Image 1 (cartoon, rainbow, N blue to C red):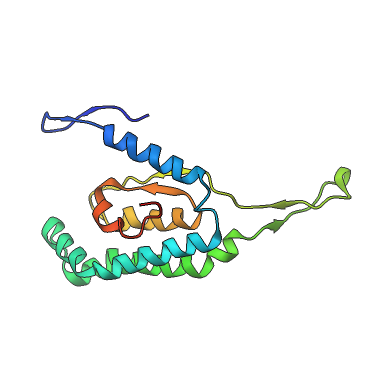
Image 2: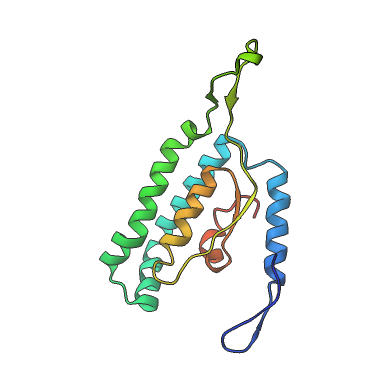
Length: 165
């Protein structure tokens, strides 16, 4: 449940905008546009393209915020995310396939299978030490599962690839 919070500096923070974002995400998810395999792969490709487009800005932000060098930023954050994205793009079709399971004897005339299906909206929260990696890496996994997602702190980077925006 989202509610108003008090920030460390004493100012009042509001989750009003967060509530609106989550409701918009749920509405978009319920329309079913993210369930198609092609939509999931397209979202992953657009996320990868956004990262590649803003790669230099990411390095600069990680340098100014955390003092990370370009090499460290690539090895510990950006490179790992790009690697995960390429893996997910390649393997999403196999993750989305129905998996045949054994049919109980009592239902011998039927066919049993597990079909991966999305759960809905996911909130991704990340710590301060690896902010890009631990925000975007789970996001890539959620795109694969066709869940709708929201990352308010990285909204400017991700707005160019999010479905429904």
